[in-house]
Length: 111
Length: 113
Image (cartoon, rainbow over all chains, first blue to last red):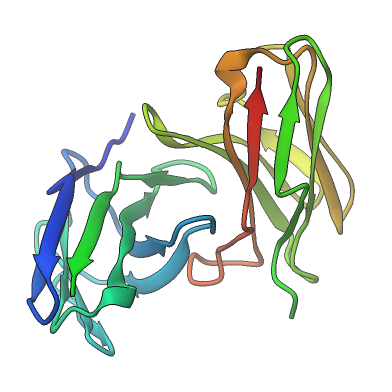
């Protein structure tokens, strides 16, 4: 089945630093989604991308839909302590109304 | 809107007992999804419903797991009998259409001892 590979697995950065993470697949996706999960809560949608090459921002977050449709990137600028959490990429499976999720990138911020 | 509501938030039970997890989707949403999250396997889709009808239960691990959606505002996930390896966080999510409205509940943390 379709799988999403996220990297890095975890990051421990200094407050104020920029963060980059990515998601790749051997299959083509027509939609890319980025979620954030905070401790004790469910994932919350941050950004949705629907078009190859699309670059979308949400505050300090910027995500891009790769041209090949097999990858996506999420950048966080000037990180702050509340950015801590697990960031997941996700995409709809080829058939059916289902999402497949990456394993997540754990972000910790040192203040 | 109150969002997707799950109960209980935490459940501790003994091996062999029946466990029932509950979910109230967002009003008006017509698709409902049950996920399980573990460190080893990440987020796994167990089953999903469209208009209260189970569409795909291929993710349900075995016959001990069952899910129902008797009406548009309520769904249950039942495990009988429960086993320690069922310990995980179980999430419910709902959406009306498209992926931007896909909303998760806060989850139920299940511990089977």
